[in-house]
Each structure stands twice: as structure tokens, then as C-alpha cells.
Image (cartoon, rainbow, N blue to C red; front, side, top):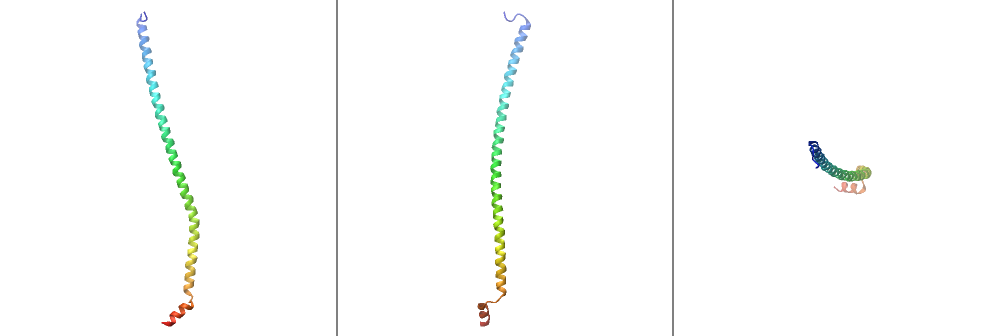
Length: 103
């Protein structure tokens, strides 16, 4: 028979214990790998979203920089227009002289 001594029973119990330990460790390793994959997928999604936000912010910054150059030019044009209107208001035109004399 297979179980002749108590040592055979001990070896059988130890082999079942090792078998259950291997099954438990394999199950834990399987779940750790699954959790690691889920975390990796989540981080990859987060990186993609950050990349998209960075691209949008880069586009906004480029638009603002190009707008600021045009805005500076527009401000200069408005300043010159105001200066021209002010200088024009200081000199009397024939129409202004005629209307002042009629009063």
C-alpha cells in the first residue's frame, strides 16, 4: 500500500499543502497582473488626455501670440488715428470758420 508509515502521510500532507500554496500564489499573481494592466491602461488614457490638453493649450498660445502681434499693430494704428484727429481738431477748417462766424 502507499501509506505504510507516518512519514508517507506527512509527505502526502506536505505535497497537498505545497499544491494549495502554488495555486494560491498563482491566483494572486494573476490578479496582480490584471491590476497592473488596468493601472497601465488608466495611465495611458491619462497621458493621452494630458497630451490633448497640451495640444489645445499650445494652439491657444499660438493664436494669442499671432493675435498679439496684430493687436500691437492695431493699437499703433488707433493711436495714430487719435493723434491725427486731435491734430486735425486743433486746426480750423474753412467749414468750421464759416459756422463760427455765422453765430
